[in-house]
Image (cartoon, rainbow, N blue to C red; front, side, top):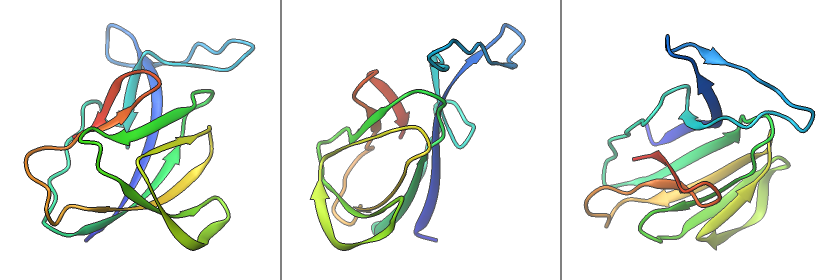
Amino acid sequence: AYEIPLVLRDANIDNAGNLVYNPTSSGFEGKIPLVNGTRDPKLSVDKAIYRFRILNGANARVFRIALGNGAPWVLIGNDGGLLPSSSQVSVIEFSPGERLDVLVDFRTATGSIMLRDLNTGWNLLE
């Protein structure tokens, strides 16, 4: 219950609400963020420690993610699997196709917390 997969990507949508893919020679960068295929998603959490398995599912976008309240998270894994030791970080930058495995402690959190992409200023997940 406390292990959540997150697929981050960017997209373009036409007037009918359909996904539009307009690649260039340097890749595709969309104008809106999607998390698990959803725009402006929200996740209700318990007062617990959550494990997020995060994939950069974008074609060309590098995400630099952080929690909106500045709280740190614990990086426990990446593409190579679990790390030999964890590290506490407040910002993580990762490229297309790259994976992260992080822990977030919500036991003392109050109010809502936003997962943000600092490169674009996007709010990804509340």
